[in-house]
Length: 218
Image (cartoon, rainbow, N blue to C red; front, side, top):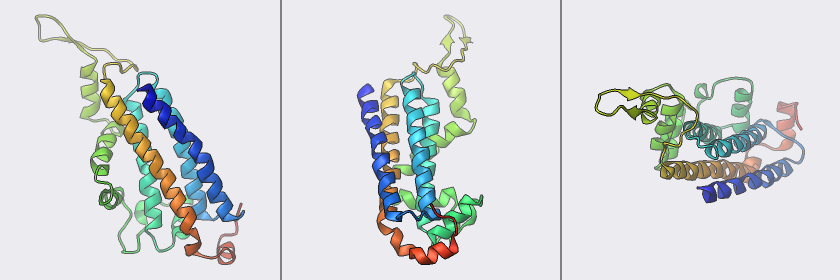
């Protein structure tokens, strides 16, 4: 498992180059979609750091919840690029509007369910993984079963000794390795989407026009 975590740790280094390439492409003029992509990279890097700490300390459940956060970034970044004006859409999100209230070019609202369906078309694993992660975000039967997994059967009775605690050594290592692999794919997905935006951002308006529309630049 440590080998998988070490490989995941290498992805941290890529965020520096991904962020630098986007900022250089902006030539000092950072507009809403650019800012949202950079904010997503910042969050993804912080989440990655927390994920590694959790897994190295015999955690699992919180690691799954952090995977859900990485998937959230993927969904939202992809959603922004589906709209007719990514900068306008990103600006609305930055101003506090829910992404689910914004529509894509086909007139569909960018709900999580819709975005999951869209991305599942090209990433078949996504829907099941998203559902699995969501069961850890919400208090559900998953939490109950984790409690049972920590319990012990009292010999010759129908009773069980229940325990609570942060250590999740009872989770088989193979499941933790699968979690690390899924987290790696999600993290790489955020980096890939950011690189794609860096390449095509010029399509969505020239700096002179955008600067008039968005007076705050970096």
